[in-house]
Image (cartoon, helix red, strand yellow):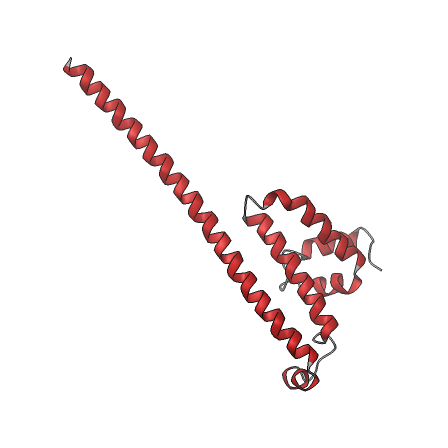
Length: 151
């Protein structure tokens, strides 16, 4: 009888350890997702504020001349709008890559990104000229350019 109780206790202990391991793994996964979600949310908040400031500067000639005295037009309203579009595409692609629940939107964002880059030579050129600014979008810009959609 004592051996049966000991075997039962050992089985319960093993079950307990397996359950604890499963819980720990689940917690690690949730923590990783929470971290990615928090980083993307913070990045989005910074991006929104940056775009607000850039549009304010773009709309004020005096501010634009003071901040970017050698502006080539990239910091005028149309240039800022192009940069903002690339920022949003980049953020969406990053979310697809980092958030499993959002990854179901991968095909939508991929096809939309390629559509925008195929239809907008200025957007495509800006992404290709500044790959470090939009590293998520740059591969799409290269694919579109290689396929011959360059206008």
